[in-house]
Length: 387
Ligand SMILES: [Zn+2]
Image (cartoon, rainbow, N blue to C red; front, side, top):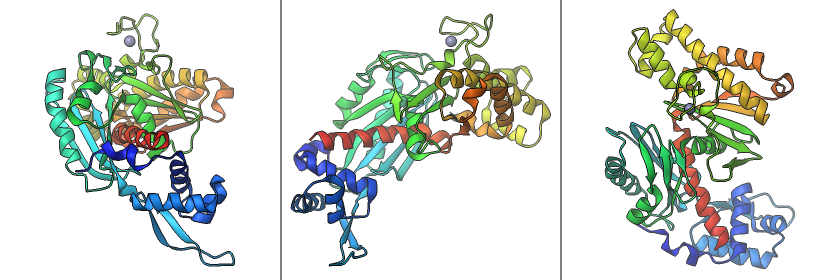
């Protein structure tokens, strides 16, 4: 198993990163074209490309069309030069992927989590991550990082300050994983990594301003503004699950009442379904809706209406190009869609509605785990540039 300790030594010069980035953006590319794109002279490009080839980050893939002289040799990035681990740490499950540097899944695992207390979680999480690392084929960079999405507030040092659905307070998650694995660990909020996952690999590709609404047991939001994740002054932006939607509504564990997630989340659906005598299990409920259960479809429509109420507020505040409904409740799209759209159209300001798309996560319940892997991949390329 190769570790990343040699990364910085392998690639020292900023120019190497510039050349690599050009290849990543526009491959396959010839040396002459790279020189043209980067402004670096041909001799420099040739020597840097040779370094990249020697380091197994780039390879030659035959010849392109000649513009007069000799046919140029084309270069492409080697996706399998390194691997990343992505983890979606849920309240009652662990989901993990091992991907190559372009995000192609090499291995994927899922595990039920009996109790979410920190000690139990660490005991399960460590071997879970190790088992993904063990799946990595040999490559020059090995596993370049571990990204983790957590349903809670995460500070810039990677500590989970507060994860109410897991009962966590001040858990130094990054520190604990750093110590165990000795490779870069990146922790972020589950909705933030879900937004990244959809932006990089899902339906959010190419969208500049999008709000990802993670609808699971609670509701969280990840804000992509001007193509980058907006994290706020302390990294705590996006707690829109606690938007007030009912002035005198139900009390919330956050101390407020009438919060959006009490009416529009998976938990809200399960509670209401329980009152009507249904099993409190999302998949069972969706199967019933699928088979035509009218009472359940009506219930999903009500949830969709409440989702629409919150989304109207979001549309009015951010004027986004798209709102993406993700996480587990995205599976209920067929029964939510109409009510969400109708409610947003009735409630959001007309000017804001002109360009907004209401979308559903393309990666389904993989948005967060893929975004977590992307955290690790992006950090790897950032380190290459800084080296
Ligand atoms: Zn609340």
